[in-house]
Length: 152
Image (cartoon, rainbow, N blue to C red; front, side, top):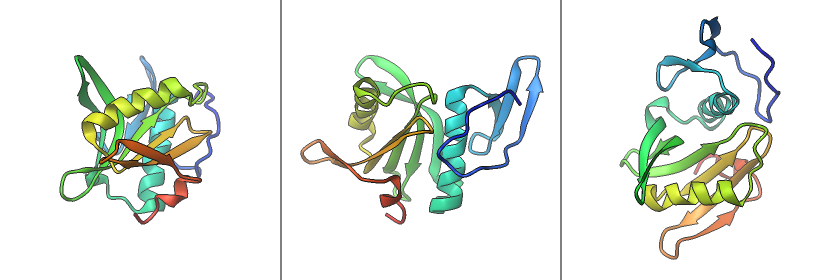
C-alpha cells in the first residue's frame, strides 16, 4: 500500500488492494471497496475505532449519506444513529493535512443544523475534537477528550 501517515488511532488490519484505479480499501459499513484517499484512511480508522473501542454496532452507522443544507446537497462523512432513528454522533473526517479550523467547524455545524445530533466529532486522524450539542439554544461545548463520548 502506498505510504499513508500513522494516525492517532490504534492500528487496524484493513482489506486493501491495488487496482487499475489505484489503492482501494474495504469499507465494512458500505460493504464495498472504495478509493483510498487520505480522508478515507481517516474515516476507516474512525469506523473501526467506534466499533472496537466504543462498541457501536455497524448497523447504527451510515457513511457518505446525502444531506441538504439550504440549497446545497452534500454528504456527511459518518453518522451514528440511536435505535429511535435520531443521530447520536455526527463525524466529519478530513485528510491529515487539513487543519481543523473554523471553516471545518462551520461546515460541520451546517450539517448539525439539519441532522440535530447529540455530539459532533471532527477529526483529521491526528487531532480529534468532540462537542456536545444543545438543540434548545443551538450551542455546543467542546469536551476535553473524545473518550468523554464513550458509553453515552
